[in-house]
Image 1 (spheres, rainbow, N blue to C red):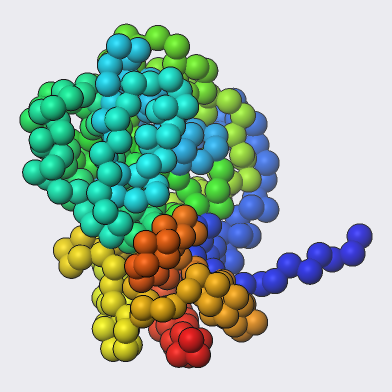
Image 2 (cartoon, rainbow, N blue to C red):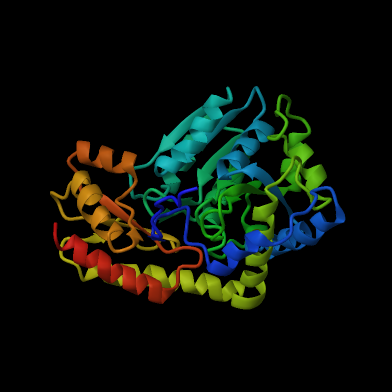
Length: 379
């Protein structure tokens, strides 16, 4: 067979992300049976390290869903929003809308409270909406991948609980890159995935499920099969998955989580992400016409969105900057397509995104920012 012409690009997009060579090599570890004792050798440590990385303690049960973060999010909707209940979704961007779209696709009664691109959740506006519609469940995004905005998860969950609702949180692009302190977060279920800040291939959605969520799920009907968190929990407590897992990814996940927790160290990993956010802030501040999109205090430690000068077009970013960097061996993110299309239609400045999550190191980011700057100066 002819070798395909696949380019060996260094990924600085927001997912999938850069994967270390040793993690790639872990894919060659022995296959195993997912109902055999060998399974426990992988998934026992995986689940324990997930607890440590999330700061979940024993208050949450880690569950691996076959699929992606969307699979875990859909399970939270199917299992925790009853037929007669209203879900309020709170969105600060395209991926915030995703939770709402999942709810509607599953026939749930839902409303979507949207905030302007690049802004975090306005607590006063949220509280007014909570008083108005009195939802049973509220979903929101911890880290908005399209805009680089991180919401204050604990504060938002506390406000939701003040109004008697259950918080569901999408943490797909921040888990593994920031201190969640999940045990004190107030979230009923926290959904994430492997292909972002964990620096693994896509293939598992991850749900951290509280006892409160488990109890409610027992009362909800029509939960589906793989989206039924009560069925998932039965297997998870045996360190198994409900259906046949990607055993290759399980081997990689075992190796990666052991390395994160026992070699790099969780605190060091989180500090590295904060350092890299600061590097992008300093880089954007010294470029004429560029600035951070998210307000200070709400900037993501895993993905930065940077406003371009007025007049820069999506075509220039895609055909000029992105392709120029491709020729140098990098995959650049010219901004989330739907977001930039909306900004362009409104006559607003466009954004580019810089993924600095997972196993991207500061020296790698420094090199990339230099190449990116040179291409942007050609605009």
